[in-house]
Length: 390
Image 1 (cartoon, helix red, strand yellow):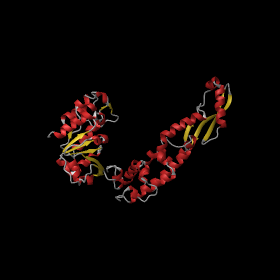
Image 2: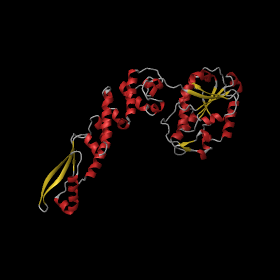
Image 3: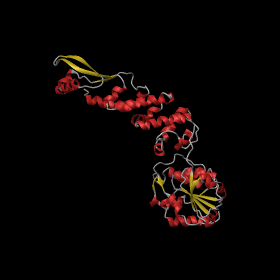
Image 4: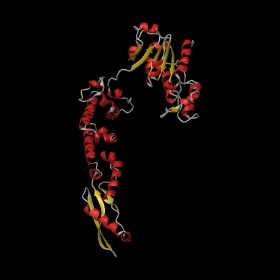
């Protein structure tokens, strides 16, 4: 016997599992209306729990809510004729939403779904995954989203900065958390799933300049730049510098790069992460001896592998088995290891170390972060490498 609260629980689970499909008309039911059997007991069961049956019947007699409640008559030998609640019939998703306290959210989501699919029917199948956006955005945010989509569709190759888009209220903070949503919806509208999925490329917008943070470690090189020693500038500006270092160190950690002392003929480039593609666009790097020092983990080697595709002669430093094994007490866990089994541009020793980390042969998801190495010993190693001919 299902009481109203039991039915509410059933419908809540049904709503949670089906509401996205309901939004696009794939009802997830054999058909509407939806019928919930209330579990009429047999006479034998009713005799065992007379008070329970009486409470069940009373609850449904007092019930006032959405849906059609059907009753049926039972003629029992011992209990006589009984009028019992049989089933609850709900005609549409709106009824279910009302039952489970989601009526307002459902109505907003359904209305906004229609608003966006009217000009762009192709969104019909993809939009339900963003049910919470449709249901929970305030009116101003939803209006901005719709206007933003409309403007980008009308101007697919504007080459404007997002700040220049004439949609009221679209500032950088608003946009930052919605890039993925906008990019995916635009991709669906454009019907171009194979195209690069990054927000700026997808939407035809001008991306912010890619900055390179670099320190010039040689006083003579700094003199060529008017004494400038710490530079953060678009890569195009860095590439055009009248500069020819003999050594260029690429380090992942900013604090590591800031700790470098003066070194003859050297510069240090910091904190590029996976954006190491930019290294191949700086012509004076090709004539320098380039060294990469990153974390000893799967991503550190993946970045090294990527950087080598642009600087084939790039050497790794302090990313060897000896460094790793001599600092076991400093290991931490790598939360999300890189997916690749092999990285083709690693040396044999680097590849072996990468495979051992990837395969957890020395420990579970081990990681030795660059900034955890004792600075004095690391600096002596770097200094010795720089001062020794290749």
